[in-house]
Image (cartoon, rainbow, N blue to C red; front, side, top):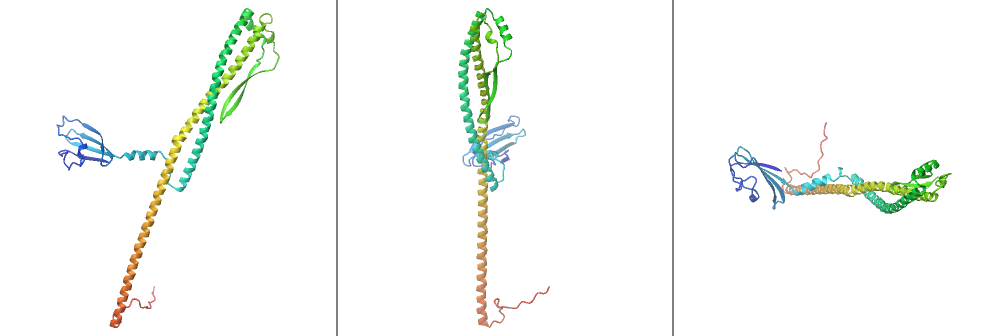
Length: 343
């Protein structure tokens, strides 16, 4: 609501002030100043009316020609909430069919929310287990790699140098005996890769390596590094599952939050809106029926009054005919034969 008024040559304290009225104390007084000294615009903040419970924003503008303008914009506190509720619901027609459809949608949203919530809890539980296993595997990996490093140092010392040993290992090993197979594990709909190490069956001449010097240390180093590789494969499997579960949990959490904080409240607001509109239609229909019934009652009373008046007039006419012989007084209750209409 916007009102504009010319306040030039008006007394702000008078009752004729177009803006102030009774609540003049909430407005600042405007004093006449020369046009070249006054500011081009003076904006006053919000004022709160205690009597009418509304917020008003007054903006006083003084032009260069000496005229003063006052703009009053009234803002009710409930307007913003109504607009927010209007935006926080679906654009549907308020019908019984729409109400049933929205209720079924709400039921599906609540069912999906409960399922996703349980899925998130299961994934979180498995995520914590994997985190604990990764911590244990890293601690064990540190100890195994430390033992393997000391074992390799012992082999180097026993064989008298590492270059000759490396050449012998490369010559004796033709195919890889240590291999890795990949499987998938389904955890609440999330497929997690599982790496499993195994040793391929076949002939190997690696047992003769270092037979001349340091053969026992070479075999011990081989076993230690085999355990280290197994630990590395297990750690790689756990870390891959950790990353995949982290992404899946984030996606599921976003879906749960969207259903809980957006879809379900919006659907409930839509149901509340449809119920209010249907109740309003029922009240309008009831009011219309009451008005129709009242009009029928009034029409019946008027018809009854007219009938009583006619009966009273007919009784008076019969008495007059009995007294004066019935000359010149027509009888409206007397049966007469109507002439046939000619078309």
